[in-house]
Amino acid sequence: MKSRKAKRILVAVSMLAGAAAVMPIATAAPAAASAYDCTYYLKQKGYTVGSKVKAICDGAYKHQDSLSQVASQAACKGVLYNLGVKTNHADRACRLAANLP
Figure (tube, rainbow, N blue to C red):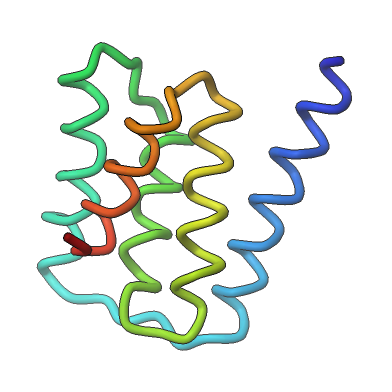
């Protein structure tokens, strides 16, 4: 069962990494604010926010204006879900990271 979970995490992270390699990454000051919104939301919901969560929130922000936004959102939600975040919390956190309503 752990192997299956690890494969899903690996696939989601690979999708995000692939999207990052294909699309240019916009880095600006607001990036920290949006990634922060994602991590802050998860902290407020009682989750431990470590380096994996910070990285996935940051990745969701960096692809908000690109064609890879859909893949980025799917990867973000999938990784958070596999880390134990409830589906609705993962959805909201990833949407906050990408500045989506």
